[in-house]
Image 1 (cartoon, rainbow, N blue to C red):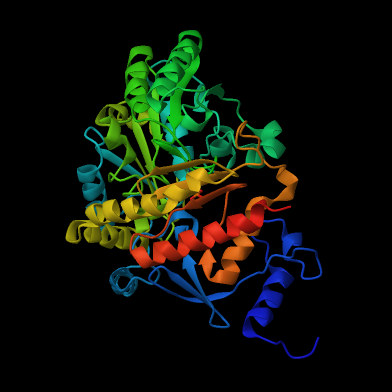
Image 2 (tube, rainbow, N blue to C red):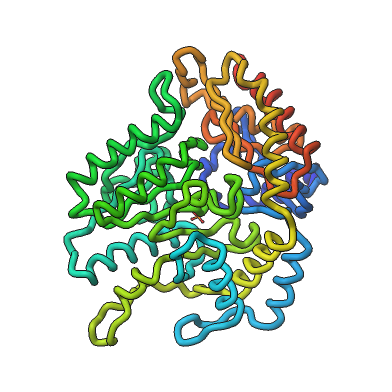
Length: 459
Ligand SMILES: *Cc1c(COP(=O)(O)O)cnc(C)c1O
C-alpha cells in the first residue's frame, strides 16, 4: 500500500491489525469484503456529535451505547474529573473510603425510590447484575433458605454478557452459543406490548402476563431467589416496551411469594423513560436496583447496586458467623468515576433536565408519527427519550425480514454517510440521543432514519 489517502484509513488499518472489537464479526470490516462496514476512528466529541480523523461529523443518536447524557467531553464533567485526577485517582476500597464514594452513596439513596438505603459499587453493568444475583442468593442462604438457588427472568431480557448476567438474559444472539456454560433461569413471558394479543391494550397484556408470572411463582417460588426485570423497556431485546402496571403487579407478587425483585435500570435509569428512574412510574421500590451507563454521564465505567436495610441486616453479624458478602473488584468505588457521577447528578439538580426531555420527547413523537403509515413499519413506540421503529417484511402479519438480509445494517450504513450514528438492533431502528440534543438535531436523526429505511426495505 502507498501513503494512506486519509487519516481515517490509516488509523483503521492499524486498528484492524491488532484490535478485536465487541459485538462485532470482525470480517465485516474486511475492506475487500462485500458490503464492508467502515471502522471509524473518532478523535473528538462535542455535545451530541462525534468527529472522526478526517473531520466528518456524526450525530450520536444512540448516546454511544446508551451511556451519554449531557454531551461528549461535557466541560463540567471533564473539569470535575481533572480536579479529582490530581487529588486522588484510586484507593483500595476495603478498609479505606473517600468522600466521592460517600457523597455519591448519599445522593443515590436520596434520589432512588424509598427503601433503597445501601449502596454496593462495581465497575460495569454486568458486574452489578452479578452482585445483585449473588447478594439475593446469599441473603436467602443467610436466612436459612439455601434451597433458593434459581432466578426468574423475562423472555427477551438482556442483563449483560458475563456468565451470570448472560444466564438471566434471553436474547438468542448473545446467549445461544454459550448456553452450555450458563445457569438456567425460569423464563416468564415478557409483558412486551408488541407481542400482545390482537386488540389487547398494553395494560391488558401486562395483566395477562402477571397471571403467567403468578403461575410460575406458585410452582417455583420455594426454589427462587429473585425475579429480574428491565423496568418499562427491554432495550437490547429490541426496545420492547410495556405498561408500568406490570411493575406494580410484580412487586405485589414478589412480596406474596417471598422472592426478591431486581430492577435492572442500567439502561433506563437517569431520565431515559421520562422519570428519573423507570420504577417511579409504577410507584414501586425494588429489593435491588442496578445502575450504570448514564450514572457517569457516559464518561467512565461505574455501577452501583442499591438494596434495602433489611437485606443488609441479613449479612451483618460477628465475623465468625461467616455471613459477609463476598464480591470485590480491584477498582471498586473508583474516586474518578464517583466524582464524575456526582457531577452528572449535580447537572440534574441544576438544570430542568426532565422537563426539557419532555419537550424533546414530544418533538420526537411528532416527527415519528407519519412512519406509522409506512408499509414496512409494524410499530412505532416510545417511552420518554427512547423511541423505536419495528421494520418488517409484511406489515399485516408482522412477518420480519429474514435475519440474513441485515436490513438494519443498511440503515446504519446510510446513517454514517449522512452524518448520523443510528445503530439498529436487528431491524429495530431506534433513537436514544443524549439529552443535550436539539430539536433540529432530532429532525436530522429522524430524516436520516426515514431515508435509510426507504433504502433498507427495497430488494
Ligand atoms: C448494558 C446493559 C447491561 C450490561 O452493562 P455493561 O456495562 O455493558 O456490562 C445490563 N443490563 C442492561 C439493561 C443493559 O442495557
